[in-house]
Image (cartoon, rainbow over all chains, first blue to last red; front, side, top):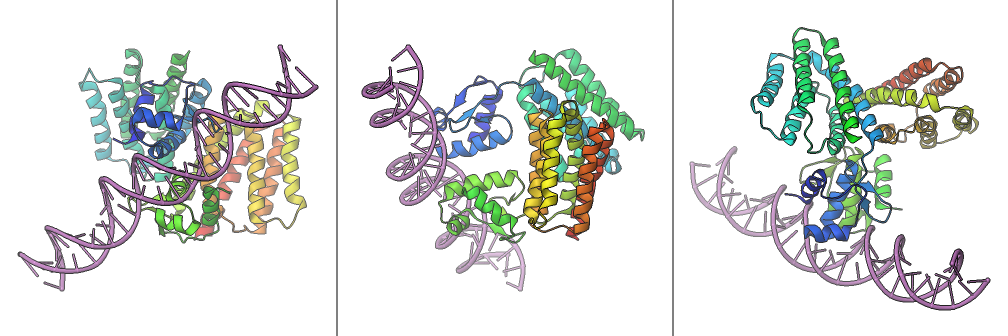
Length: 204
Length: 204
DNA sequence: CCCTATAAAAATGTATACATTTTTAAGAAG
DNA sequence: CTTCTTAAAAATGTATACATTTTTATAGGG
């Protein structure tokens, strides 16, 4: 396992408190590697929002910022709606079927961890987006999703929220199957907006 | 000057042909540094689209891709419109005045290089966007703009295009001054769309 | 003649060592 | 007691050296 992944996992799990400043040498010692791989991992994690530049004093674990969450979800609302719109002409029974399989898998296993649910959640969305055949747009959306992951973390959402979210997933599929892409887009936007609201609320 | 900037400048100027594969050791020798700073610079340039991963064979100078340009400008249309919308409540005479100063500076000096025009162009947009006070959204828009820079390059646009672009800039300011943000947003979207079309056309 | 296996070559990943810069703290002057 | 200066300490940036992985070329078999 690469240092990047080890460090990211630890950041996800909250090993380092928000606001803490980390130095290259400190991380090198903690993970028992030299500073070279630390530099690589840290730079990558900075570009994903898991660490922020702290001048020449090293890097800091960023504080949780409700305004950042709002921005991220506003962007996702618009870009994911666009991506779904571009995917619609390419969607067929096979793709929609595979997407539904992912949803069904989430339903069937009632004792999945929050992390596993989150992974399948994204797989569902990505399976639709990929059909658009727009790698650049997809890459940006994926990056925004990764930035959100820091806030989603490992904490489990309420059962109520989870049920609503899952219902919306099926509604999106149904709208797409019945040749109503506008409706699907609308549900998707509201779906993302609701996720953002839930997260902001959780931060307070 | 950092290796990152030296390498980026050379990529902008087309020192390395699109499709060319570059190895760490090759770059280290060309720029007379060790491979350590090469690794840092290359990773940063990859995240900005100036280089693409070529597996374990090194990095490649990416080919020009009309679909990528289309994606980038579609995203910018939506996100910059959003950012302007969020900025509107914070705009005042001072901010609008400073934005206009930037435009006037472009008018006054008739023998600016394409690179200088491009820089002022972005300064104008950024001066409005900054007012929104949304760092995360702004950072994403800025990153998209940087990805576009690879295509804009150093080539000069037609005088006709430049005149139209500048007229639209003034129209945006006028609409904002007259309390018509919806109109300003519309012009902005068309402004960005036109820039994208001009670029795609230029690639063919 | 083509394909596979193996060895040599080359490239990347990483550790150690050194140079340069930045930060921090101590001490002297006001 | 505060502030500026200066020196020590610590942190980052970079070069060199080594280990590991990957690529490529060659030789043998089908």
